[in-house]
Image 1 (cartoon, rainbow, N blue to C red):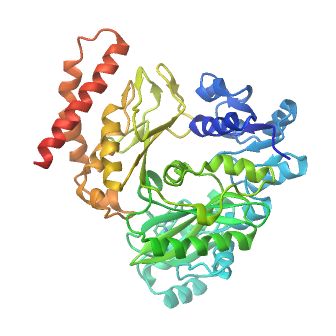
Image 2 (image 1 turned 180 degrees about the horizontal axis):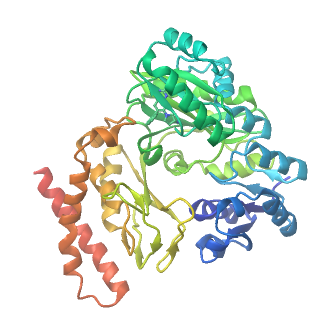
Image 3 (image 1 turned 90 degrees about the vertical axis):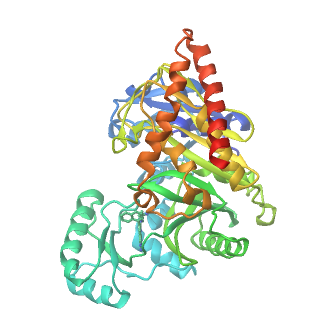
Length: 495
Ligand code: MV4
């Protein structure tokens, strides 16, 4: 039975992304919003919208009974959770199952299996996925930890089993540091995830973060859409993602994609998901499964042409995948920059506030997924992402040049943002070479100065444009002059 009406239990750009798929499929969309999001674009985009409570997420976007109540009231037959909030919450998925509302995502059983990282590791190992050398059970006692670490070899990393995303992980260089590290990780595991269980893995230094996009349907079909490289991250927040990875050969892609899709089939995975790997010295090691649509899914859409959200909705409706593995071709190269309201020159502190003027880039090969507009105020209660700027090029080099061009067209006035950071990275020689790793930002110590140089270089633009009194004309002129300045800079730097 095709779904007719979807409640989107999320906000911002991803809510709009899902609603766009709904509109193309002839499905009605229902927004839910907190008091802080009354003026948000996704509320206006939806066919219907319902307030669900005060700004803090625990009182609104995480309020399961309230979300279910609105689904009932509006007559929605399915809920799309987006990413974050309730997206991987097995209790929420189970409530939907019990209430006869289709949860657009894997079953509560699979969410439970993948949410516990020790169980996920064990399941994936059974399914034939290479995992990092480590413990297959939770580690509770020091003696157990000592034996495991000796077997694995130092350095090791202790991780909370209930976690993911890097919170509470401790790197241990030798046995002398083990007892304290074990205690602190167990403490964080208890307070943050309500589960004191931790596990131990071999610590890989500066690996690449490479993940495979998966789709599984209710008929037992599972395919992969190639990989994304997400090595450019800071404090476990990804900032730049791309597909394909500059490190993955077609043979490696075929082999790892097959392993990942087989594992999805093995656990009965329904919906879109991601299998994360660390990639080090030419080898892949399973890390965790993200059982949701991810922020960075557009780079995969750009190179494969597959609409991942539409596939999610088809799968949830009980239809088969619309494509077969042999129909998937990786065409060209795509890069995403997350444009955040944060100050890259001041330790990336969040800078929510009013966007006074806004001009987003356009033209060939550009996609901007955003939930903002001129005069919109970014509320301080949620993550500070303004938009995702995604570009496509015939190859990585063209994609980088197009991203530079798009970043120079992008004008956000009123709040500090991380566009200077992205401009600096797009000119960084190691980034351009594709020489990436999860410690890229710490290791590239010149990025700070590079950003400042970029900003100084653009200072004259603003002065040049001060005579444009009318806001709209000023923005258009800024975009044009910025583009010219970029070309001038590029000509100089390549001569
Ligand atoms: C690792 C690792 C090295 N070796 N696991 C970070 C995010 C989470 N998904 C997994 N993470 C890591 N897991 C093994 N076996 C390196 C990271 C990692 C990291 C860990 C602690 C502090 C900062 C980090 C930054 C990047 C990657």
